Length: 253
Image 1: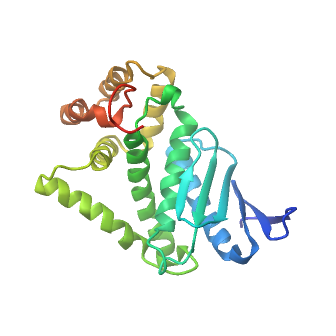
Image 2: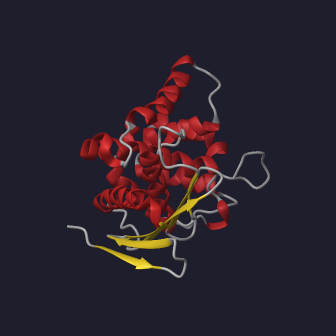
Image 3: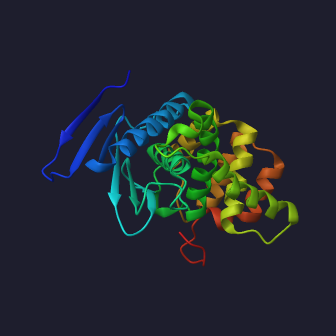
């Protein structure tokens, strides 16, 4: 049984739920969404722990009514924020269940590997979280089906819209985006080595102080030591400009 305590804050409209490893702040009229978020987040936290990531003992999650829909994790602190216009998946195109899995991927990686001098490109960070999130969303669906969220919906099917577009782009030989390229790198790395080996890889990156100006060479060396296939190593060499942030190039951080 998960114990839940509710703390009333100075703002009469705001409450906090302490649930498992999460402290969740929310407006009191969306409590069912806060509870659903807690259930999903704790499920993902347990998967991270099983894989050996040793995630933070406490993570803050903020649900914030806004004029936009945005879900993001803090790079340096275990904090996730969901800004929302609506939490009903039938009214907005957001995939809340997958999104929470995705953001916990960021928390899991950043807890092990600090992004010293921002050597990780945007695509490196997001590609990892994309593929981690996709893998965990499948497990979430096996556990809860369409009922993980207060408004039942097929979040696995909604996620597949993106993954199918990515697969079709590669199969057609299209000029694929940097986002797809990074996703493919992480997808192949996890398929080759297994999710349970990723914490070791991230800890090696940390212990060997990967950072610019030679982050690309150090990551390549870690991939060699990690025992990846020649095909994946060649793929990294061909696409490292999308994975590593170079201060003097045109690619997004």
